[in-house]
Amino acid sequence: MLKTMNQKISIFLILFGAGYLYLTYNLKEYPYVPIDSDFIPRALGFTLIGLAVFLFFDKSSETEEEKKKRTLPKKEILVLLAVAGMIFGYIFLFEILGFLITTALFVFFCSWFLGYKNWVSNVLVSIFFPSALYYLFNYLLQIRLPQGILPF
Image (cartoon, rainbow, N blue to C red; front, side, top):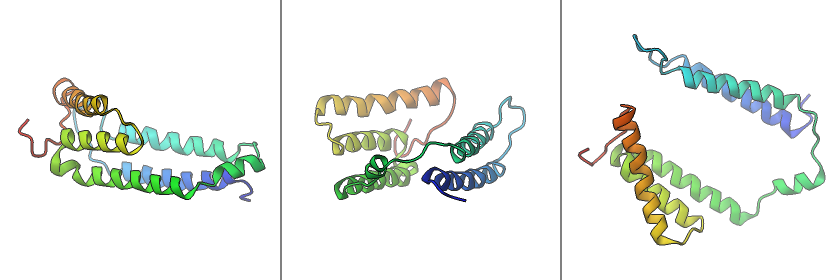
């Protein structure tokens, strides 16, 4: 039944999407809002399941060259694990330090680790990008992001 890698991945994605959709139906509903907080997560869940079904019936076959591309060198696996560790650190510190500080640190250290060595532009981007997003969400869209240890 599961002949190709695409079919195996699609089964996993369908199961993941179903679990994700189940969790979206547990989100709190708010009265008097035109689009509730569960609209986007549900749309993403249904989209994931739909695309996974298309992937399951995809007729393309994998060549030997594509199989060789799938193997990762050990150095790249360590880089992936390091970036995953940075993401987990970002998630852990997000509520404690707040959006601005955590995002600035994440953008700076992740881009530095991945090889971007221009310190000036790295610092500028890691400060101005989260600041612009924070202003956009908190003051224009009225969506509160965690402030953490900062007083604003």
